[in-house]
Amino acid sequence: MAEKNIERPGGAESNAPPRHIAIILDGNGRWARRRGLPRTAGHAVGSENFRKIATYCKNIGVEYLTVYAFSTENWKRPEDEVKTIMRLLKKYLGEAIDTMERDHIRMKVLGNIEGLPEELRELVKRTDEISARYDGFQANICLNYGGRDEIVRAAMRYAADVKDGRAPEEIDEAAFGSYLYSAGIPDPELLIRPGGEQRLSNFLLWQCAYSEFYFTDVLWPDFTTEELDKAIAEYHRRDRRFGSVK
Image 1 (cartoon, rainbow, N blue to C red):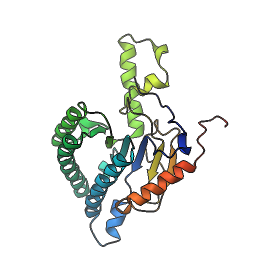
Image 2: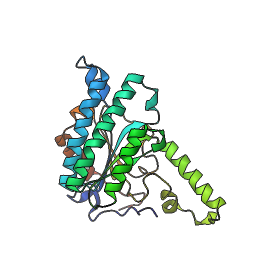
Image 3: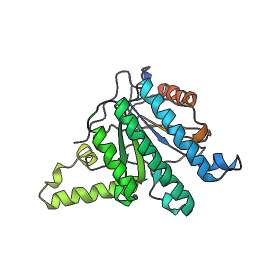
Image 4: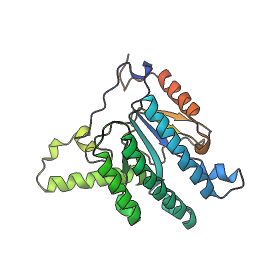
């Protein structure tokens, strides 16, 4: 059963950081182009920046960080760029395994894992094994992920269960959430998109129904911990009513 979303004491008015922050990692290619570098250089810098921001989130008390690293649509990009991204992901996951063991950090990959190269699938399996042993901060990396694809796959899994005897009337929002990649993870309170664009781009469509959105022109490789603090400060200024009236 998916974990229910429970507003933290004090909500957005509290000084506590959001329990769950989601970030669309946008702007790597433009960052490189402005410097006369290949797009792949931007992805390398962006990968290192994720490590820095994830560590900062853990240190300030964020419980979950979910990042959009590679979408189902990103396979349409130039072949050399896709290969570079996959190589960087392999490098990052390999290094993350040592960090997870040392710092007791959990990591979960969300997306269609079967569509990834075999070496990446093996690393994902290893991170799952390590994560099962610990509690605490969890980083979620969305790979080969699409929000619509996630919902369709969840519906197919539910339909298969109904075919096997589950009563159709048992389904509700919480029960359906248990079929999503994010089962057991609370929805993001804050979604951040660097890079100047102001759209979801098929990211966490179900989960972000009541997330606060924060958009900034800062490109992801330049997105610092100070920029994250600005986003959290803006989150605290929001009046989160969830459809009701205070």
